[in-house]
Image 1: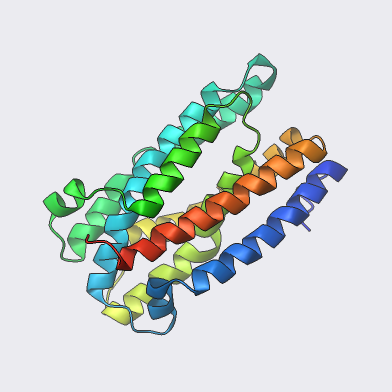
Image 2: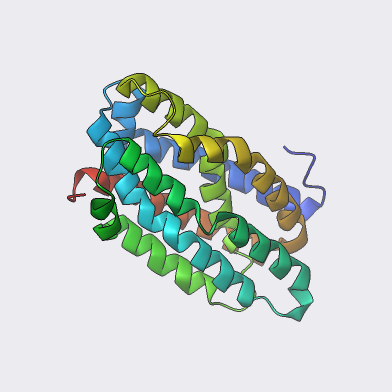
Length: 229
């Protein structure tokens, strides 16, 4: 249990989020492209496909965040400011991802023309809907999954991808960047848990959104093998 979360309500919420994260990890372990990565059978083509399918979620991320920020009323002005700053930090991350795709041998026109897969469509629709609700405290659950992925897995994925493809880090900069920087983002999230989880209803909403986002994110990765990139 993190000592960065201090209220009783926050501690209960954090405990539920940790359980949700473990469930998400189990879901990821069953995704074919992640299985290939973990077993050392990942190819450069796998890497290009993964980047191509992740790009839409990365592009839309800043839109979800800023829409969510605009949905908080004046009683949550401090939250709105923090969320807007987070969006500012990440709103052009997709450019780094596109550069990795080209460094891995892909054509820029191909990744620019790629459409959202079924999982990305569902994730985008859910996130935009939730972000448009008044005072959407449950978005903490979404941030827990997405920022946690960067903090806990991105650096390891980058290392495995480079090892499997003979890379030197030139086509895994996006993942390495998030592996290095998402610790700070999670520190801000701990503060939000204390600020926004004020009782049972908030906790249930946050955990539900975390579960939904985890499932849809895993679906997004499952679709890498089901749809053309």
